[in-house]
Image 1 (cartoon, rainbow, N blue to C red):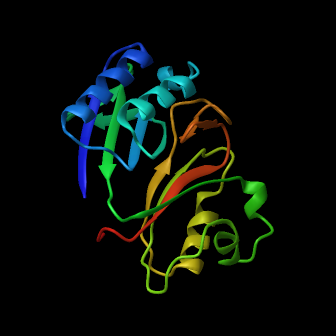
Image 2 (cartoon, one colour):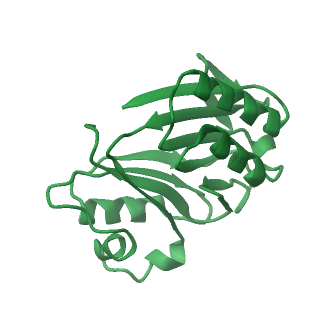
Length: 195
């Protein structure tokens, strides 16, 4: 596994993305997964096109991220100012399964059955790791964590709630080329690395 992080305080998201992409390319990392976090001012300004450009410029297979009221990167915390933080991960041999779930989709599902019905089967003995990012006003993260534990007991689940907006739908979630204003997004990782 190889990784590189980058941060930009540029107020223009297109320029911030280009700056971070340059750092990723300069490090020689071709990412399988790009974790991207933006401050609310960037998240409110139609970030989809700019994040798609960042993904294309780095050659990342997948992009996952959200807004955050406070971001950490470059050895500092970034609050009340524009910021973009990027973690580019090269995960050779890892199976990466992105997802977006809404609360309505999960409600009727029996514990453990939902993930099995919505994500590809894993090989016997696989130990997945889940990255979970949720819009806190529209999604019960505890429900998804219980689902993960029922489907894969003991599987690590990392992540948190998007933040920085004042109400439902104001904390966008980014998954590959889509921007979502409700639910939870993330990836399930399996194989190719030890956690």
